Length: 409
Image 1 (cartoon, one colour):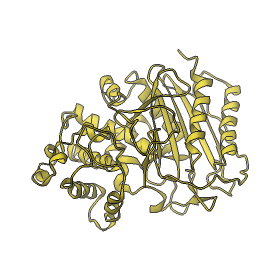
Image 2 (cartoon, rainbow, N blue to C red):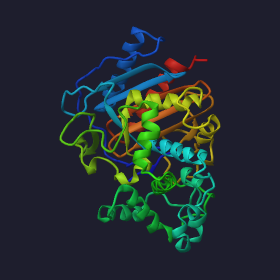
Image 3 (cartoon, rainbow, N blue to C red):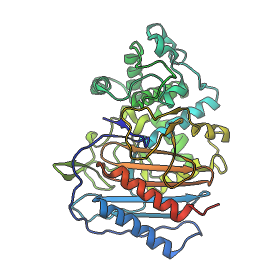
């Protein structure tokens, strides 16, 4: 089950040692879409990505840098499936896990700008037919609190696992199942008073998805395709496992079993349950992930203008400190704060906070950093989740920042 890390990442924890199996160096070409850079930059970035993957024992990695809306550099290296020689490409879909949360927060912001919700709309107002049976605390939970993990709903626990285990028996579409989840938790006491403390809650984001569905009159899945993927040109973006059933047409996720990497073929077990998609089941290519990061970093400077610039700023403005989180990792030293689908933190390679997030479904990991001062973004992705993954990805993010953005104006 998903857990919180100080990096803002939701992912399953693992304790096995890293694999030592040697991986064949499989390099793909570098795509350079901006006028900055050149052949030298192409070769060095591609080599950097491959070197990090080889040293860490990862099947594959991908990374990209965007500045002022232009893709400065992108690199991929490795294999889609451990033990094979299927090179990853720039168009390959990687899973972004909880980095999906920022998109869910954006969709809620759209509903707010359209007057269909308010940041302080409560669950009692949104679901009036359930209000009479709601716990007093649940009645007061607001949209903003759901998106900032301050709702009082708990972090993932045994009760959440039990709830998810019952989902397959529930009739209807995913929207119906999310509404069923609202019904199930409405009468239960919260873990804390709304708005008073931080608890990274995938349940909370699933409920936020149900809120968006009630406000929009459409499913979360349809809305993210129509209102986020399509206008932003995220042509490779999708929901669920990144590979097709029975095919290795994308980098497969990997876990550790007995100290060895195990590839996860596409199946329901290869991703989080679809009912919690608002919390983290999106996949896309590294180029599309960079396109998303570059658009967010621009804070409304460039089309499409999906929400107002002031709303984009609100999405990355801190709401609460994450420092007291019991399950926080020390992967990123120092205290982070959480905004609305984004965390903010001073990175080891910056002198001011960046908005960022990390995501994992326990088999893949992805990090995204956005520097709104420099209008720039860095993304790093891999198709494995092992104890060293966070450290390796942070290291690569720092190298890319130093090489491409440290002197940018």
